[in-house]
Length: 178
Image (cartoon, rainbow, N blue to C red; front, side, top):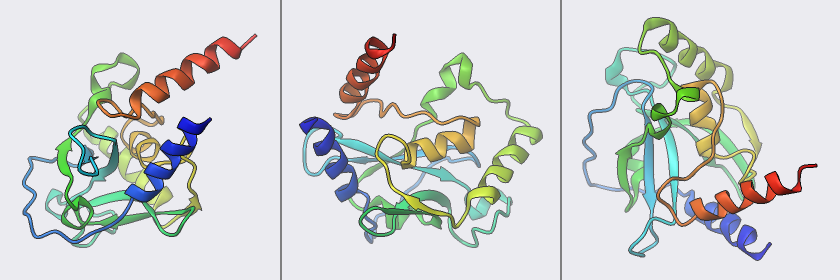
């Protein structure tokens, strides 16, 4: 239980928006999942904050203006908002990378076609500017962006300190089922 509380606190503290003058370059396409690796000065990634790339350069208008991402932000202590933003502002000191890690799994395969793009656009329009209670395991940025891209949520935090805790939680849940 202490580990779960620690993870929740780390997630809450880490979802901050800071200014950065570094230029983020990337070959992002509409629908890519972008990960911001939060390290807090450690040699390893503690967790990843996720966003969904909409980019003004994609020529797809979902109301983003000159913003390039949509993500679940920490509006206040326990309240989250789905909002457009800029990679540069969310980046802070994080490494930024394209992280479509679920593409390799059969259950999450997407077709790169107009119909899939239209579904993603509709999911964005259905959720933009919504507010909700932040819940580390039930309502977080990774669950939101994977739902946008694949139509179903997933929470795995690959390559982070949080990932083993999620695996333990999942294993405990499987063992507790009758």
